Amino acid sequence: MTEPAAVCTLNISIEEKGEAAIVHLHGRLVSNVSGNFYSRICQLIPTHRRIILDLADVAHMDSMGLGTLVRLMVSAKTKGCSLELLHLGKRVRELLGLTHLLDCFTVIGEKGVTLGF
Image 1 (cartoon, rainbow, N blue to C red):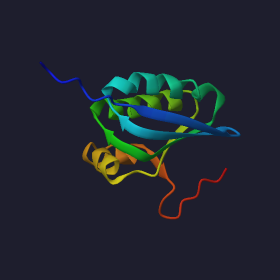
Image 2: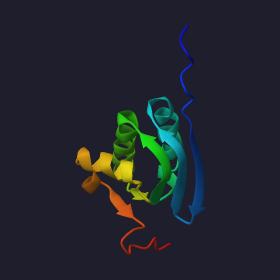
Image 3: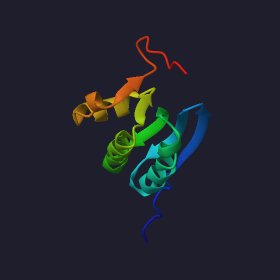
């Protein structure tokens, strides 16, 4: 008998500040939650000029999660919206660096960069 797979959850809370939305993510950005994550964030694109993904509490990201970030970035850019990453953890930063995607994203909230709302 096989053991049930561990439940992978991603909690999403959205804080709206004018034309910006700060999306706080808590949990794992992996394949079984990436579709829902993409849908929730895409709903913000038409009504916001700036979407900030706070990744401080993202414990793990797999290739589907990474692909979803890239897909969101492309969707946002085509609609004139910026997608920015805030509080990258060590593992997420390493993943973006290994895949040469770190330079594709705007990373804010570190090294003296302010949010400027």
